Image 1: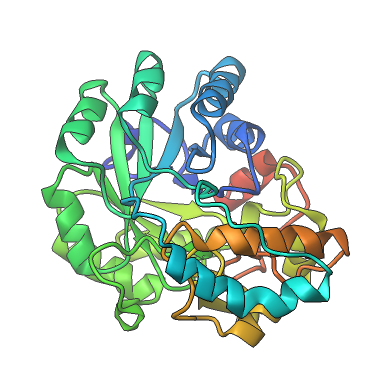
Image 2: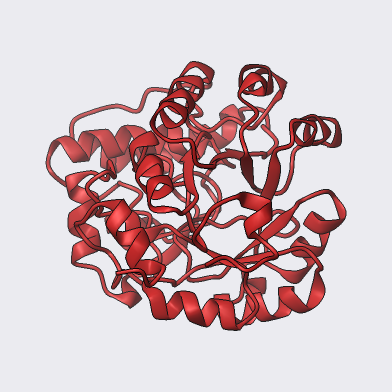
Length: 348
């Protein structure tokens, strides 16, 4: 069960938060986790405002238990034509390989930050929990969210980020270890050498802040959950283990990559979106390099890479697909997320 420090905060019965995973899940996965007693999460960063409202309503209709809405809060830089021209030139041989041409699309960025327009729509719903990635929204917007009675979580990848989150209004901090899959939540620095494994990071953050700490990264079974709690974490956030669940929308190619993955098969890359994220190695990462300085800044890299992904996936290849995954895939099971949540909590 959750420690006394976090259960009153989130309202969930179990110390399990399902990590929001844009592109591989919708409300169905979140609902299953909520029904099991965990905190199900809906990734909203790639959804339209209408989709956010629709998916949230589905959760509210299916369960009365608390849920989490997740948003990015990055700044949106201007589209840079010259940077994209260089990136398109770099990728041209791959477009030629499939007999296609890259289509410039300055308005094609698929990840939008949290803003007042989104807040206008979800305010009547007063979501119980909202989590953020890449820091926190500006002060006035955050104050508005907290006025609803909503609890605010955000990811930290260093002690400095955790302290910043506490000082700027977060109710709990998610300590995202370097093992975690998907986008790094780093926002105070771009230096990847500052990233730490979950166990080290949790211990250091617990000693440095007074708000609850949630462990994330490399957690795949009940023993891992217990280990994180022994380090001082009030709860855990788990993503990769849910990716094969029946309610997940993980593609067949992505599922096959996870099933064939080993711990050393993942690496942190910026080529798919412009920000560092951990995924399973594939041709794109091998040939372009995991970190490529030509990649446009987040979220614009996805414009060109998304086109290549579509062309190659039609050929049955995941060569240019972002195969997000944490280092630990041993907990991945083709079962209901409700069953998996209870197993992670040691209830079955």
